[in-house]
Image (cartoon, rainbow, N blue to C red; front, side):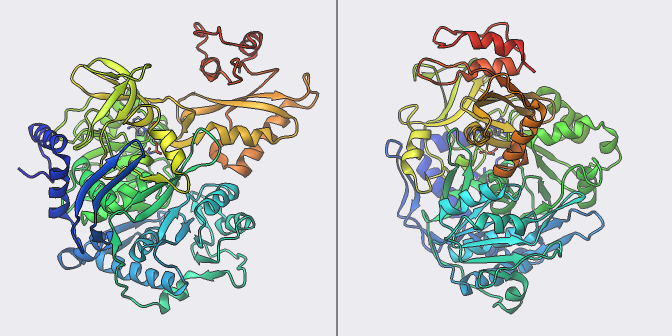
Length: 635
Ligand code: 7RM
């Protein structure tokens, strides 16, 4: 029996028990046998959820890129590491071997070094899904700089907030990006953002769309000539186990996004181990995760987890709908993809277009299907199972978070029997708990509650950049001595988990987590607006869409309401990004509030979802009269 590669349900239970009974012995064994260390650890784990402080493999020294690249050079140097599929299907795919990746990462690391970047410096990466993005991430890791990837769909304002929060010295971007038939002026967005950032000294610009852009003298440099002149070998910096590897921002329920900090050794061990088992990756397989590297799924399961296992990982630049809705399946056929990992929102969008697109292509290479990002509804699950997996490929519904670094609750394909809409069982080493309203853990099965985790796992985020107090308040204060996920879940009769969704004020739109607070703040900047509240409502394709209740300064506002709606969505687009636009905007004379002044979102959610038969307890409402008015005018 190998603890590293689990193949049967019996094995899962055995290894799981071992991992829970003696976590330190278990994780030390995994770490020892499957990774390269410059120096071994002195202590496997120390933790205290009340501070909170969590350390794994303390005293160890390593570099994650040595594990992701260098160690494969002799055994699989000519194997494709990254398989790049461009936006335009007529542009040739690129097969970047482990040897080539090594050289590209070394050259990029040399450039960073030449430009004054040192261990511990923060580098913001704002790039489309092109090879330079993966190379830049790995180059930072190689020299020990902390990367902060910002999804290239975010607006200038959102970018500026993140650059400033992490105090980044450098931004890496491109002249532009392709998105289906459109191009996006990324460099223009960076220029706009950097008007608000004084910390950035250098901007490296990759060429992608060959557009004419403005290069700011003394700050902006074209990347390619620097790479051409750079040294092709760069020794990996020796990092401590708990040195930060990256910061990745996730939206919170109030204001500022949270810069989740992930550290080196534990993150590496856990993402590699989960990747191997959750996707049952075998040496000759081609693995494809459709996420963007701007999200945690891309960090852990396009870059670090796959490369640590010497896998071939596909990087797709485009969108599922270009040139038409068969693109995903055309790519699966073309590259003979064996593991395919995507989000429910993509599955629903594709299902809506009918099965003809799927049927045109040979998908027989597919062995495992994955889903992540939000609860998958039963209909989408079956569509995926029937039409993509042809009922032969198990679906791994993987529940996890930016904060958890790696997959937490998931089936292990061919071992765990799947059940539609259930993420099923905790992964090895994960100890979930369901909590009731009184803060007590609920035991037994067929129960539901708030999902917590009782014991640390190697890839848990260690802090929020620059704000440890907020880290403590958000994740470790709701329940004593437990990590609180913010999600609700139920546990069925055999102990399978089904995640029911967020219990806080984050709404997941098309797989993107959007905090309601920053959107409301933005709307409230409009001169005609008094206040606003955003809630989610069910949407066929996006999973959830945004419904805004907006109170205007002058009741009986004489201006054209449709124009106002356009203006509101316009400022949202400018300040946050088009993903945060509201599908519905209802103008109100007031918002239902509790006596302590908190908007009762529960009621607004029910009205938005057209589910007003029972509004629940409204006795704490200060202004019950507005509820009727809002119901009467609901959209
Ligand atoms: C990986 C990722 C985290 C939130 C999480 C959940 C929701 C993610 C599932 C899911 C039901 C799933 N990170 N979520 N996966 N809900 N089933 N399989 O998505 O930080 O961006 O989002 O996403 O609410 O708390 S994330």
